[in-house]
Picture 1 (tube, helix red, strand yellow):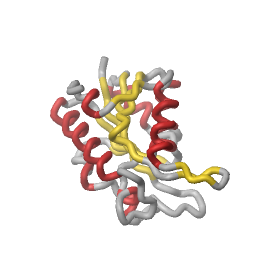
Picture 2 (cartoon, helix red, strand yellow):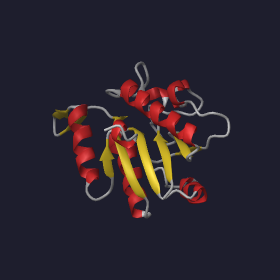
Picture 3 (cartoon, helix red, strand yellow):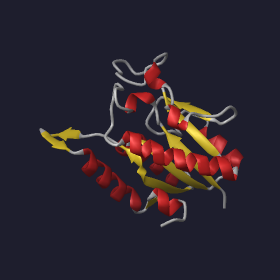
Length: 182
């Protein structure tokens, strides 16, 4: 069994002062950085996912902006794969599936942003493609959403999506549990 770490969209626009600030992004990124350092130390495969918005009217992750760059806390080192995407699902029209197969990975450790969008769609796709996904719940972030005039707080959005992924799509664990410390 080979694990691979998939860091989804930990990009500047999601941090304080960015074009699409998320609740708890700094804390989630610090936990993702801990996992990244673990994977670097163990030599296990890891993949950075970077979203580039190309749809008309997009307001963040715009090409040639500081906001589209992967945040310094998880900055890729030379030689670390960066998969560029244009859709929430990191497998859609990218090399991620082929890259993961080439690495021999069958278990994926996923974290990043947004819980309700790219983390969710990538996790579900990974499950459908036969991988064994684990989502690191405290290394993910999201934002408040609105529906029918009601604001749904980010913590509730996050909890709902983690609960929905937990059966059957993924194991949902904390960073400490993934590291074997829980």
